[in-house]
Length: 127
Image 1 (cartoon, helix red, strand yellow):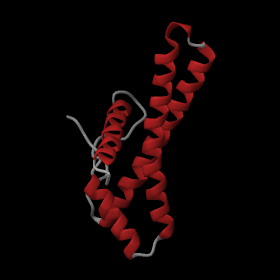
Image 2 (spheres, one colour):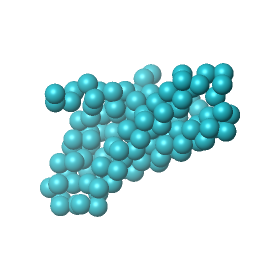
Image 3 (tube, one colour):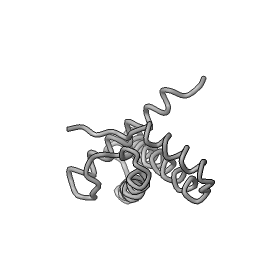
């Protein structure tokens, strides 16, 4: 089964945090959504480096960029569980309904859901 980031749940959390004047929780939601885009950016940075350098890529630089990507991925995973906790507290469907774990295949499923969410946000932007 393919899981996604529930945009409605994110919007409902935002409304709840605003209604409760919970700036700390709203700040955490903002930080979480930025973690999603930072993960996408880290992947992009690594992929562009590999495209441009191919077989001539410096192994140390590739490893550095891969670590940045890994840390960004772990940050995304660490943000999902508390977001789901807020949803449970307020009777809102979870932001992510799949298994939240750093183990495979779950981390890959989370990555796919987050990348899809970031893509959706970019596609729906006001131009």
